[in-house]
Length: 445
Ligand SMILES: [Fe+2]
Image (cartoon, rainbow, N blue to C red; front, side, top):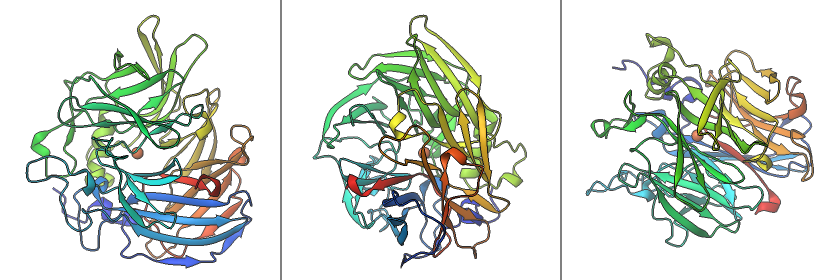
């Protein structure tokens, strides 16, 4: 039992109590003028006095910074106005999920000129470019399930691949939107049970499924996140064609993956998947922390998650796995123009640092923020449309253990990550650590 304030309500995770805005933000250094657009970041932020029972279930709050040709024009933060914010439950009286009652707290994307706040198993919530809530979106009635917070945009076609998982058969449903945002493809995919599927991957020809041993547990409904590690469920990665519901499964060593870095096909037609892996022990420790138990109070503290590579060979039906780096890492990101394609670089954060990996040489750079400062997910923005991979900027909101210290939006040159940031935008308040962000250039809207 937790006898003190849950970890998700204290330190750098502590929520803020109100919505504010400020204009003309001070900048240390020089903002690259080509960064003209909006950086939005989503994360849980319970209402004052509220304890949602888990870090994962607090109401979604967006923090937004508008940059315009070298100036930091504004900051504002807004809760997503869902019915849940007004007190509605996730579940209706008949037990079914109310997808419009989403906390909408996990990620934020732009697709087809629209902005959506996302949370798995729920409908997307459309937002205005000023972070006001328009409302839940079911793509004209065509989205009859929830939607993952980690859809993948195919850089070749602009299509958005997505899925939903649930507790009743078919457990997994695949969907695809056109580049313009029309939902044209939906079909069920057979999996062995109701596993928690936070992320997936695409390659040029495949959809890559992560069917891992964290399984729905009816006993836990109403007590935080109703999923638990299972020693009986076989961990598998699946390869599926983009238009065929048949999946080729590859059994792997038991583990959990919240986040994929990228997947790609190699010259031999094998699928190479790079993702952040949790061992059984690391999963239990992290899941307890997400549920509110401070790491320092855990008997078997092991929060390490690190970058691994799985290579799946459809010709032989074999899979190999290896650790690419032994350092702690989460929130892996790539240049979005490389999603599903060969990528050389991958970025991630290690609590007090932003790190960069070279797929050929391992970890090649690390930017230490120092004690008490925490790195948010580093979002890559290319310096120009035709810039090479890694030629661009990494945007990350830094949060602090000390609630009196305001946060900063750091802009790093990705090619020189170890150097000091090229610009630091001083935000008018502390921003709690959150989940995922995105850069939305003006021309996308
Ligand atoms: Fe995530």
